[in-house]
Amino acid sequence: MQPKGQICKQKIVAKQLLQGVSVILTTCRFAAMMRTVYPLTRSYFFTNLAFTIQVTLISNYWLGTMSNNNIRKSLIASAFVGAFTLVSGVASATTLADLQKASAQTTRASVQSQEKINNIYDQSQELLAEYRTLVEQTENLKVYNDHVARLVADQNAGLASLDKQIGTIEGTKQGIVPLMYKMVDTLEAFIKADMPIDVTKRLERVERLRGYLASASVNTSEQYRTVIEAYQIEKDLGTAITTYTDKLNVGGQEITVNYVYVGRIALLAQSLDEKQAWMFSRASGQWEALGQEYLESTKLAIRVAGKQAAPELLKLPVLAAE
Image (cartoon, rainbow, N blue to C red; front, side, top):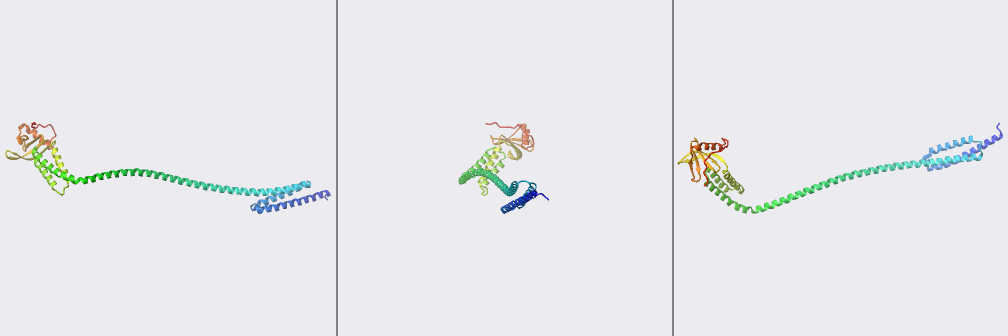
């Protein structure tokens, strides 16, 4: 049998344990009330409650000999520590989740804002490039328009000049037609007064000019061009060396001879058998016979003029100027 004093101590311990359980139950009621406020911490609450009860029971079992006041204080302190630990844990868990959720929302908002900024920047760069291209095109168009304006101004000036010329063309025609007839008559008189160099062909050219002047199918400008061309041919005779074959009246008898003229300096003729030669005298207007010493030189002149011999120094009779 246990001693009476020990039995009393065990009763006291049991009573203290009952008081501790009562305190714990009170704490549980408080925790249940807090659970309605924080429903997401149910599992965490029961875990801490079980741990608190176990710690209290073990402590009272091993410390049964402690004084009543110390045990009561220890149980109450343990209960309140467990309750406040439970409440602080719930509050900490809720605050951390809110912070994490807010941080995630802030991060997403930052990412979306950065994407908007990037899109706006890209659009601004595209608009800037387009603006620069349009500015360059505008400058080019301005330069081109100025160029076209100058061309149009020059063309307008040309049109004005043409209008002025057209207005005076009738007067010009009235003045140039009589001039062309005078030029043809003068050309015919010159040919007849000149040395008899291919006279037949030259006079035929004059007659063709008169036919052009009387033709309605030939305009005035073409008529004028033909007259100027005939004058150019007559001018070239003064520097040409040419040969041709034609008739020559010698002593009332016509014979076929080879003519050769060296500009308007000398006009010679030689028979086809190369045994006779003549020179035209401007002073007398007649053909004069040449001596034997000029037969070879006349023959050579005819060959050079006909492209049958290379050009070389020719010994020909030339009348001295008076």
